[in-house]
Image (cartoon, rainbow, N blue to C red):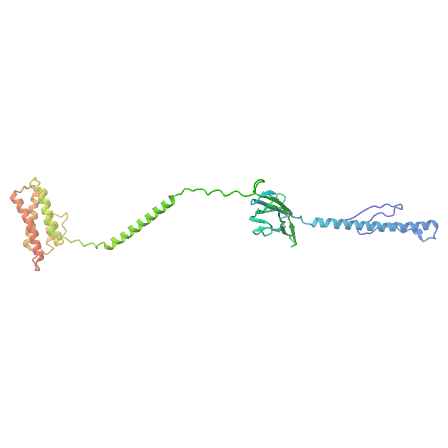
Length: 372
């Protein structure tokens, strides 16, 4: 900053004063070495007065500049201060009522604050709850933090909510404690002016018994008991169940004899179904022989079946009897031959004899001659 001023005196020789305190003085008068005269003495005295006036003006300029600098700089560097505000729901309450107290502090973003710790009591008040809300950023860039308290008093009279101390910390580490203003609250009794004692308690309400939960419990207990019973019975039956007996393997001759009896019971001959009768009785004998001798008999012609019999140990006489029996059956099946009653009885007897002979031959431990 440069301070410039034009100071005009009655002599007019002071022209400029700078911020460094330097001044320009008119060039030296060459007549000052002349012999003094009355007029010259008056001039010297005037010059001394002007110099003193110059010194005073210079001192005043320096003093004013220092005052301006010292007055402006602190105000420019000073941080904004925090603003504390306390509000309460009501100043007149009834004993036991819950009173809400809100402590709000508005501060710059660089300032850190710490609310005072609140316990179970605050002076003569009982603290029901305390909650610090999240900080909120305002439109002007500052931060607002709120502490909400729920207080209750259990005696009557004028009870004061005490002051709360809030600690602030600047960025430089400097700490400052801000105190709220105490709030006086009038706590009144629940009794009216004409009432000096409390009313008696009302009689206890009669609650109708509800048996539904008990019934549900009994149903669940019965279900559990039934389930346990069924599990026990299951394991008991499993332990007592006898091992399955192996089924007796029926002999091929038994199956063949029973098949012949069932065929006769159908009375196909009496109905005139000779072809069907001879077809089924020949198949019974072939299945018996195939099971007994290990020869494939299903869907085999008489020629194919007898050819396979040559490969097994069948006596020649028995082989010829089997072949003749099957060929006689083929006459009725394919040649449309109609046998008489004697021939039907004979073919039934030959089928039974074929079964009996094969059973006896299989029981003999002797060598047999294989048919050529």
